[in-house]
Image (cartoon, rainbow, N blue to C red; front, side, top):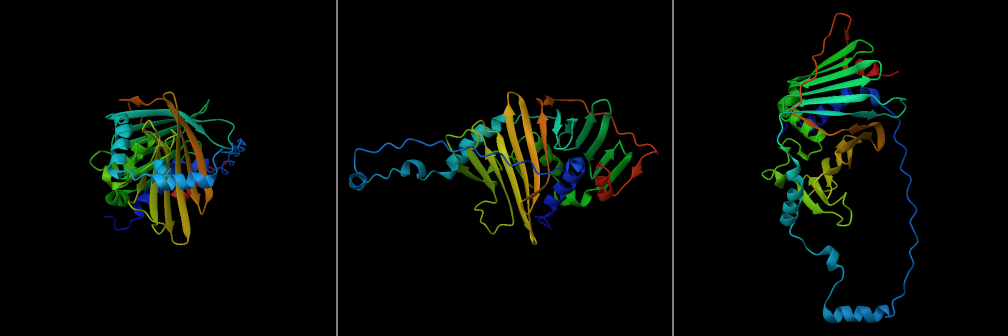
Amino acid sequence: MLRNKFKPYKALAIIASLIFASVFAPPAEAKKKKKDKTQEVIESPVPAEEIEVAVEEIGFDPDSLFFADVDPDAIRKEALGAILPNYREWHTAMLNGKLRLQGLPISPSIKIFMQKGQKISISVRASIMGEVARIDLSGDSILAVNKMKRTYCLESIGNLRYDYPGLINDIQSLLLGRVVILQVGELTADNSEALDYTAGDPYDENSYWYLDFPKNRTETDDFTYRYTITSAGEISKMLVALAAGEHDYALNLDYTYSSRNRDMDITFCKDDTPKFSTRIAFDAVEWEAKPLSPIELTSKFTQLGIKDFIRSFKF
């Protein structure tokens, strides 16, 4: 058990702050709601009163077709049967993509190298300029470098990793679009009972199942998260919600898929107000990839604290 149950969330917040230091952008415009199409109403030739009497006589409840009791364990097994075959074993992986940022005229490219459970290296590159930012998360520290301003930030996360030893593994799994049970690990058949499983809309392939933590969640729970799973067993959405003191925080990850490519929209909100958001458009995963070249810090680079480092990315 954690000595402080909010520390895993703080770990993700610190890492997210460094990784997305340059993407504090105005909240995305709300999607325009589609106008409801009017539907032609066809009157039944049989009066409603007669239908109700017939239903009572035969003891049939039409709602039972949609709200019949379903064995929760059967739902869990069905969901696992769709999800787990997507999770191949791996040792190293490379994600290549583009950052889609509001307010920027260009879309920087991004490379994310991962050594399973050991390291995450992120390189951000701009056309002509080459590599402009770099982040290395390994061991008990995170190093972030702003090459344009020749500044860097080196933060220890030793205490956080003591409380959350699987932190790197869980971040890697989320980047790969896999279900993670925080402090437990990537979803497997053995740990699957840590979540609640609910059948979604059978007519919507993007919300076939819902996976919730904690089990039997209530409105009074101050830390919750939910995965929305597609009919193909892929995450379409993850929502993490935290109530801390007088404020509510939410982290939204939205995944969309096309062919072998995958987009991930990341939004962090405080009290329902987006604080930063970005989209990463990923190409297909390159498995068993080679690591990025090491970071070279010369005497020309200046070390900054995390707050000053984040400010250094603002133009």
